[in-house]
Length: 74
Image (cartoon, rainbow, N blue to C red):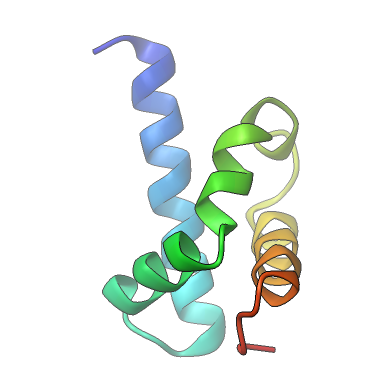
């Protein structure tokens, strides 16, 4: 596995954990929610820009994307 792939995976894990913490949900629920409502797809597609912002900014962005795609956590 390349260093770039390792960095991406670490970033995704950090984002999922921060999302779970913000909404007081489990990491597993956060992962499934973000997967279902396209939050993880967004982070993956926009990684080059998103990883330069804070994790809190990424969580807010994922929250907005999920909400636009039918997610109910606000």
